[in-house]
Image (tube, rainbow, N blue to C red; front, side, top):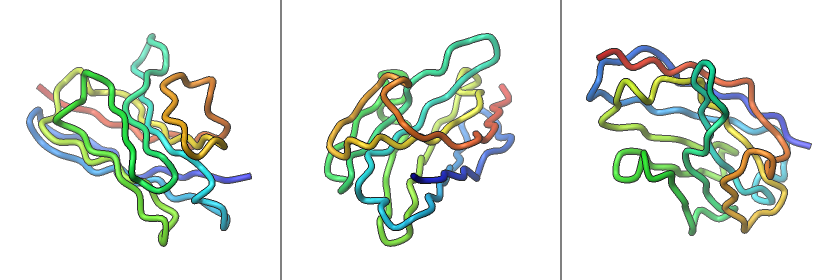
Length: 125
């Protein structure tokens, strides 16, 4: 089992940047693929980005390609989401998730086994 704790959310103006972090507990971080999802009020949780266990493969939602970058530091048991050129429509709670299949880059929330509590990102226009 793994526990996930997100941080780094906040209020930023449109065009600005934020970096989210997700710290994982336990010694088995490299056995998980990791992902970020977001959920806006009244909407379903949506895929943002995923990364495999080694960091060699990544996947992004079309809406964030070229603006967001997912990365991981396995020595620190942490996954990051660098968000640049933020838009008002990026406003949401951002969740970190872990998948027990380490090579998969799933885009469906139901494929993930563990979730963090979320961190709010608000982009003002």
